Picture (cartoon, rainbow, N blue to C red):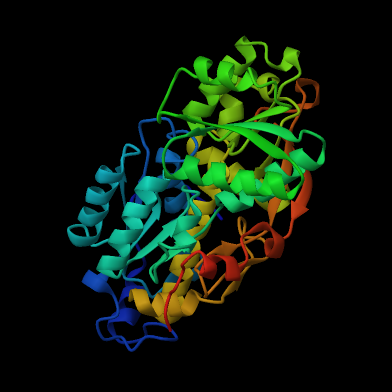
Length: 420
């Protein structure tokens, strides 16, 4: 993979365009009107200015552009897509804004697929737009299991992680390691509510108890009152379900309150490497958490992370890698089918098994559109063990794909019905 220059709109060679126009539109295409508006449009909708900017944001747009460049390099004159355009927008973590932006992307800008969409309330709005427009949405940034539960739909795939996976890793492990008495602090919207529920179930299944469920505004910059309330119950551990900028604020205030010195540990429900980078390893040292991917976990990941760093100046979070993977898998499906028709692409992907830089032992489950893959129990290193910038994590163990995510039967029990 080489990326000398990335641009938002990429056009494949004239010979590839000629092949498509003459009807050689790939294994599944007949060459007649196979590409809407004569091109493929990939939309990236996320937080580009707020608390989730660093963990995904503008750099996820670059990751998608990298996927486009790699597709073109791989297929060259054999590429069947006449033109690929990448568009993006800032949803400001607001579901009403996300709803409007998604509608604009599908209707006015011709988006064939929308990627990313952190913030679960925003993601659910976009999934609804995808369903009503019969266009694709690969969700990367949101965690709610509603996307594969009661609000699943035929055009949405949940790609990177979810609250069940996080709780099944971190909540279960921390409890089994002896911190059995919990207080949970969570942001009061769909993601936080789902995290609270999922972690509680995992903690109780492992023999622990949750003595308090403390809801906070989102976004929020002052967690002192909520931490004091949790600490007053003298728990073994406070579980924080915040993410991005909110998590950074909470961790700072946890340290300022001296809660670790009181014997109250901190468990982080969701953490990105960008969060650690913002504060350094010291406030997080020894914290165990569940990561969907780590840039330095093997040679393949590091090689891609090196290219990402050339483009952005920083190392990728799992959201960046997942957006790259999602764009690449979508383009591969279109290439193989010779069409950007959403139903055709869905049919190609359902049941597909994949191994790429992000998806290890990956599979697009047909029954609930959960994309499963290996995930990782990670621990934040001590400062003395950090050998280079961004070298913050130790992978403790791998949680196999088949164990990491909610079983299909549970998704169906939760209300997912994709029909025949």
